Length: 574
Image 1 (cartoon, rainbow, N blue to C red):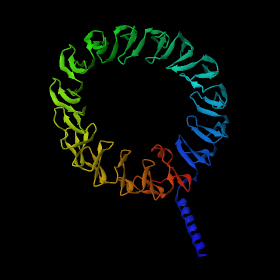
Image 2 (image 1 turned 120 degrees about the vertical axis):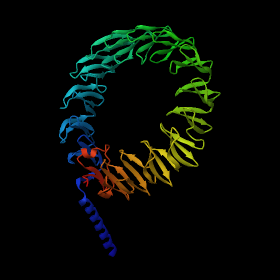
Image 3 (image 1 turned 135 degrees about the vertical axis):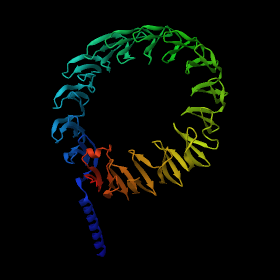
Image 4 (image 1 turned 90 degrees about the horizontal axis):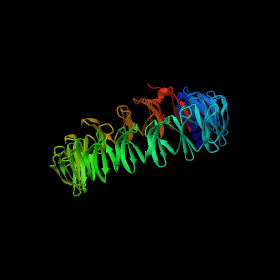
């Protein structure tokens, strides 16, 4: 008897606790939903027993959950819904606007038409449900560039129709696709170009592909290429074996297996006489003849004879050139500036990184050795040279002065700073070797905002690039900064937000920029950004909006889960 009485008392207390919890909660909608979704526009989808409905931003159930699927289209304030495995359209009151007849349905376009599917056939209806384009086509009616015409497929062929089902382009093409504001139709070996009104502009025996510019088409006929504009006017005759567009406003063209250059009007600038044409700058073009490279200017005048195995522009009218596997530097008169004795050479801050017998070093512009070729690799950045040898790194400035002292071990670097280690302690120096963060930490890593996470005595903190402490080492892990001002921290196994929410929770996460969900003993609650408790941790979950600003937009309520069901509450911020 006493045992039964004890059970009854416990159950009574449990019910009292639940009642007390629910009584103290400012419910907008009591827990009743199995699934809730984000708001899109003024509505959010909710689910009960596998059926979907909608609530509005006032927390009112505007459409009772009875649909298999509901998709709100806020542009026209209508809802596509699925019922008994068929799609239809309802308004925001749940009234049926378009009957549930369709196996699939797309969104309404700007012209107020919606593609619909019955069986395997497609057509289009307007917002009243009237069939505007018969449901007889084999694919969705793709809106063309003008939004007044539709690419339609029938009996395996493509054509163009308008919304009155008038055939604009006959449905006979194997392919019909938009290029800019034109249409290309392919029929066997023939290609046709139509303008934005569907009028035939040009018919050719050959292939048409997207042009080298936005207003042109590349034509291929009998293995020859040319260029026409969208009106069918010939820009470049169909006489070239290849045409390539250059970012320098000219075309490189190939004829009789030789390359030349023409301008955008098709006028010949450099006749087709070269075996290859390489890169160019504002003044010079790299060309090859008889497997040797040289340089010409944009008028075709020879600057450097085609007598090098390779050549590339350096700076100040100097060129890297290669002869028999060795690189040197010449000027535009072909005077040798740096002898041809290096396996590789590249410029870096008025100096040159060179490779000799598999090792890298540095020379100046006169060829004088600055760093002896002894390194496995050398890279340049932020006005310093980083050099690697046998797994170790050294860093010097442009004068050859050491930036990274010999007793420092390199850890990592970014554009401005270098994390180093000495006697198993880490710190940070700048590109000039100045100590920014003392070499005393167990570990240092980069933060995302020009600061550093540091670990001391097993605890993490943060120090700015000016060396000033942002967070003293007290965290179990590196603090995480979000929204620029919030530092999520873990201290002695508990989480909080520095200067806002004391570290006493098992988890802390955003709901909005003013409200956070906190977890304690497996339950979730809500606190404001000052740490004031809005709701004690009693919920099984709290829904996180995809956008932090959604809180204000959605009239100040959020979804919570209690006793296995989702409801909506209105948090009161103090």
